[in-house]
Image 1 (cartoon, helix red, strand yellow):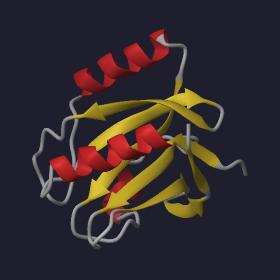
Image 2 (cartoon, rainbow, N blue to C red):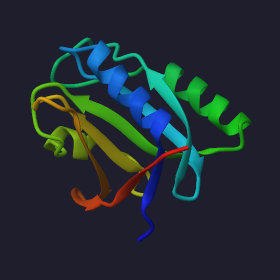
Image 3 (cartoon, helix red, strand yellow):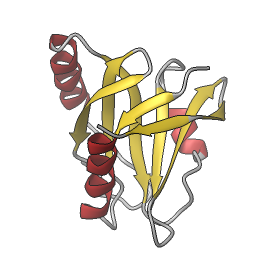
Length: 135
């Protein structure tokens, strides 16, 4: 399995996206090629919830169109856990549609944000290695 590569500026943008919206969960898409992220697409959590997120179908489709126009693919869906560990909940697993798209979770439970990456397969998950790439 290839390591999932996230450039430092995109990693930092995800961390800031989550911390700026506490106590609510945030979500977004990471796009690029192969296993390397090239762009971040921050989405608004329309539910304004501490335990879940929702983005309308129209917003998702519009974002996917922009990603496609850049000739990129969605590599991962990221979201935050404001008060719990960065481990997929049963709802996270149930709502994750595409096995080939990774799930990235950023937890704000601890003093410093903690991020983990997962592959969701057959209603289960396994942790994936990832690498924060400095420019």
